[in-house]
Length: 77
Image (tube, rainbow, N blue to C red; front, side, top):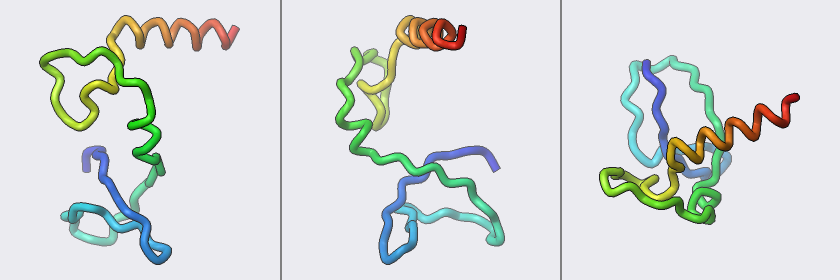
């Protein structure tokens, strides 16, 4: 199975996917919990005109990504 992102709600102690997960059953999933409000609260990056989808305006440019990685490497030294 290829990795995918699935939105879910938490109800009565259970995570419930917003959309159905079509699966053969007996699968074990690795779940990472991220709150969508964190993404909405971030200052949107400059949008590229050809970028579509719900994360439009939240993705950094390649140059910003490279600067961030250089900063991370500098902290490791």
